[in-house]
Length: 101
Image (cartoon, rainbow, N blue to C red):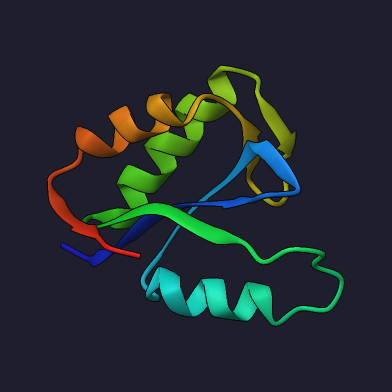
């Protein structure tokens, strides 16, 4: 079993677009790195995240479900136009610890 994070970010410039990803790295560290990039008008914010076992498998399944809805804005960067509640329900199905922002 490999532990890691599944997480969702947003940016106020695009209120209905969410960035979904999964990693062994803490999403707050990833967020800090994303926000240090030049070219961001506004900083990204963490919507929610979860620390789970088999994060890569769970992340791939959620990503596949999101692609199934055909809501991906940028396939290479995992930006999706989808209701936040839908993604939150996918996260809720994964046993793990919710990460506070």
